[in-house]
Image (cartoon, rainbow, N blue to C red):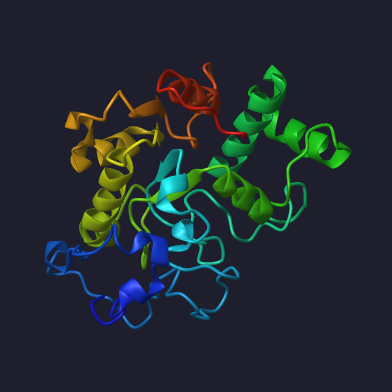
Length: 276
């Protein structure tokens, strides 16, 4: 990993480099017995890399590319890049092998389905998107123009332009095991912890800025706990959390809508909501 990440700051957008000055990935926290085999690929890859099957423009710090620190209003916390290299873009929850929402033949991940269902509900108030058959209803209504979403990549770009940072706690992956294998739990996640914590801390401590963290699942909540920001004077003044179970679980859908909750928290903190 040291060799792979040599010169990693060159991949960080200029606006974020002052925030990450003086912080390093925690190579010493990676469990010593973990070995990166020749058959394993570290993805989503470095900026400008051409790994086979990776989505166009995918790289480790893609989530920072379009959004400067002073423009961040909401942070959606993910865990790892998608397990399929063709899906991992560098933005949390974005599925990189989707060209459109309704195309047949491409399997949409449960988390991606869930996100679009709650976004459709947030826009329309139609509870049918949250119930049984909700994804089929979303696909049909997108095709019919009843609810308008841009293409998957363009939609994530638009959300970013509205101030949403899609941040994974682990910025890389090499080997996935359902439930969290040692390469994830004792390798990639602790490796990136100092970098992710620095980003979170900097966003909370910005003067005259407001941010809400959408923590979906216990893991995401604990990312905030371990970053120590809940003890910061800015917490509950200009920064806060909107919790919900993970999008891959049925508990994600009952009211309140997680996107609406995030906007309500922003309003409580004196800011305007996100145009989801």
